[in-house]
Length: 389
Length: 128
Image (cartoon, rainbow over all chains, first blue to last red; front, side, top):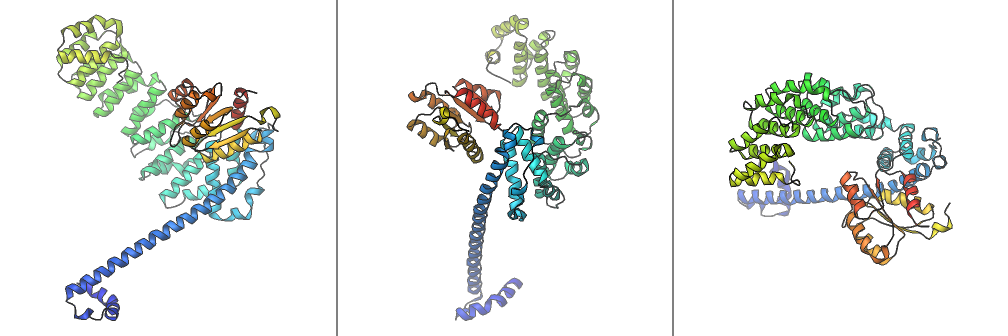
């Protein structure tokens, strides 16, 4: 009611002026007229705002496209067709002509930012000597100061932008600047900071594993895995250190994947200790890791704990036995295949039996002959080499 | 400096990355090649139908028609006999490289590219 009185005091005179009979209308009609007017005004304002934003965006696009063409030509002339590079001078000895990049136009902030963006684009598109020149140009023009300033911003998106720029141009950053960001509450910032830390830290690129309190999400693990496995010159540590001591389960899980990738057999004792961990998801990861490392010494232990494990751990144990293929557990696998009514257990027991090859050939044939129709189908399905698990 | 024997060589350059297209066009033109640059598979297929080329350099992931399709169709074209094809792609998986080479590409270069390396490979493959 109060809002109506306030609105009436604001818009009432307008209605009274242009709607002669406004005061004679019943209150309900007055309210309806008022609301209609508000709705029409709001729609007009919304459309005008959209048109304004689109117009502004279009003008920005035109302006950016124009300056990008100018910058691209400048970079192509000075870096791609650099006379010294074409003559075979090593990129670190090439004398860069900075003058074209210090013209008056580059004093404007948005043009400087466009130059940063184009340099990053060029660096991502061309490798070799020219790639080094793009990075040198970035530093010699002191554009990294812009990126460092972004790291000081309160806005997380700006910080992320700064990190991406520094990472793309391989500018060394002090650990104290990035390390706090690796535990940011903002998922995207945290992820970019971890990537930047691994790529840029000169001392210990994996140090943030020690202090990581926030979880390493699966997607982040995928991104980090790619960065770790593709970054040249990275010293790979023994990941057993974090498997043993880290209290962050996602870090332990990620380290298990890295142990498999780098085939770190020295980490096996630390992984075996995880078999007693209360978290069964972590036990699954540990068993999977042991299977892939072909740590067949622990086969007996896996059999011993098998009956006390939940379904996902049992399946992983069956897979691990298949990966070991020592031939010592063929009867166990056969027993599981016959005993269980669970489809997943049956399928994995069958698959692991078949993985044993010749050693289990007779048993598999015998099972096909004697099993139920469903059992035989599962066995035949598992024998198809095109079907992967 | 361009040499006369490569001045007539016509290269079809296909990439949806405008920067690569622009820069490679300039580099190849400077080397004396006659470059026809298109930024999508559909236009590329039209060009292939209409003209004869001495070499095709193509990206894999493009709008309308991808690089694999372009190579397959190009290889079936009567004018395309013995015309070398170079794939330049950011897809660096073993399966993509195998597939590219299997369907008829003569070389496979991963992005980011080294312009000098690409030039050497072009010179090696293109018939003088």
